Length: 177
Figure: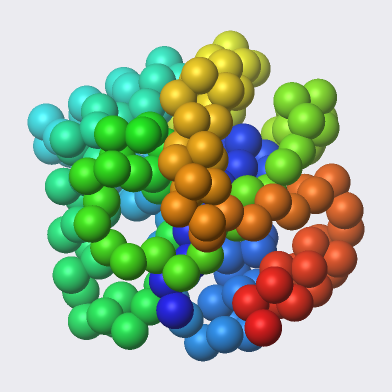
C-alpha cells in the first residue's frame, strides 16, 4: 500500500505517519526529515538545502524529485510506504509516476497550525515565525493545487486535522478498510 499524507506544516503528518507505520507495518518516509538531515551535511547540496529551509522556501522540484526517487528505490520501500511532505507542487505530483493508493489531506486552519508550531521545542531549521508563515503561504499557493490533482484522480480523502490524534488515526484507518 502506498499512502501520501498532505497538510500544512503543523497538521500532524509525522505523528500520523509514525502511527500508521507502526499499525500497518509499512515504512514511513518524511521528506522534511530527509532534508533536515541533508542540511547537516557539509556539502554544497547540504548547504543549499540548509539555506533554502532557513528562508522558508521549498527545495526545487527537480532536486526534490531526484532525492525522493532515490529513497523510494531502496528495498524497504518496494512493498509500500507512507510518504509525508511530498509532492508539494503539481509539477512534483505529475512527474511522480508511482501508483498511489490513498492521499490523506489533514486539514488544519492556519491559526491552528501556527499555534501548534509555536509550542514546539525542537531545533528545526525552518521554525522561525517568518519561515513558518512563508511555508503556510507556499502551502496555499503551491500545495493546495496538488489536492485538486489527487481529488481528480479519485484518491484524495480529507480528514479534519483538528481532532485528537487518536480520532484522526481512527478515521484514517477506517478509510483504509
